[in-house]
Image 1 (cartoon, chains in turn cyan, brown):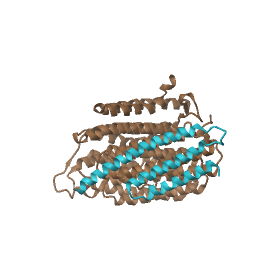
Image 2 (tube, rainbow over the protein chains, first blue to last red):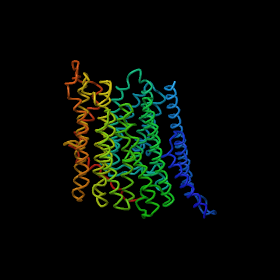
Image 3 (spheres, rainbow over the protein chains, first blue to last red):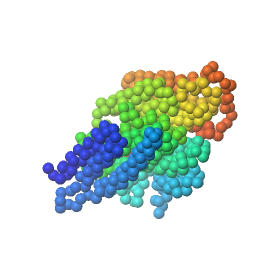
Image 4 (tube, rainbow over the protein chains, first blue to last red):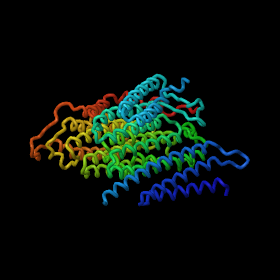
Length: 96
Length: 485
């Protein structure tokens, strides 16, 4: 097993766990976390693309892509959390 | 510095700057929005002229060039999509000026313009990108802006639908990103030119499958349509028109591009896509027949139309793909114009009558005649009656299917057409029956400013049918992707 294979399979596994969670979880927060897992898995796959046999320098392009992906996911998470909070406060008003 | 002012970069950056300006200066947001749209339209016209005279044009951003840099590319299809977005967007904006004018909508008005301009940025970016990672970023921008527009009204139903839409949209984008990762591992490059020249392999097929499923989720192809009806029906009218008319088209466009550059490995897959489309036509039709609310019916009709676009894609099997995308593209354009008109007029009807229960449409003593007429005109294009653009789209779908001997796709199209006549008739019956009204009927006869934009759109959907031949020859310019750099 070379490191890139280990990372690659881990990435696919993490993505799959996230996918199951995003489709099956009931709780709103859980689903957001599941989507985060998906993005981590996809990020792993990109990082694997950067790996080279040790003496050679790693490929910088995937690193740039992963950073972009992280930024995108941070903003998406923020929007999702804001929506959930707003929805919960509206539902709490109804219960009262 | 000449590169900085290329129409293609302007088409992406002007809406972005407009969005920021509209966010910072909420008092003049509407003005900024309209000016930005007019300027973007001017840029698209410039681009269209360039494409007409020179064919496809490529712009290496910053002079780097693919595969390391990112190229922008405009050809007939992308300019046609840009023009659709711009024109429909402008008319929807005019309608939004009116429907968001009250004091109660001050908050909505404040956020509508920045979100809509951000959406425009993302969509223009999608139509000009030639790099799949760039596409990923653009679809995320579209997703965030579209979710914002969905929840604009702030009602609980809209928030629930928006959250569901958010999950679906982000998941679709992440599936796409996973596919991007696979492709980078396999090829070491992410530009379209690299995809064309690649030999097919298992990893690339897996990547294509992931990306296509992601796009199915984002464009709401049956059975991944679960989020669409609630999201589109609960948004405010201008937002619904943008979401249904334009946003789902971005994912459809990416699907068409991907399948051009990475041929589907098997005939069975093409058939499968057609079957999913047929499922959407039937299931969406049944749900539209059962819908209780007008906007819900219109939203389900979007599911049907998207299914139909995929049927058009699959109409002649793998060998026919080189031609089938044109039928799909015609249907995309037709649906974009007609559905925006329909959602706007449905919103107008709801505003005037005070509810949008289909059952009680004929009990209302208020009859917004012009909005109802607009609804009917849009329905003509969606049903596919001549001479509308929808008719030309359906005709070319069936023509191709007939030529290839695939009669089952014709049966699906016909069944879908019959069902669409049935469910739109439910609405027309409500418009035209007067015997259940207890009080004197007050018809809005003359001209209402708010009806102008939807009426223009609906008339456009019909009139564009006469220009189908020039549109067809225009979208073929520079297609498919020419010589790899």
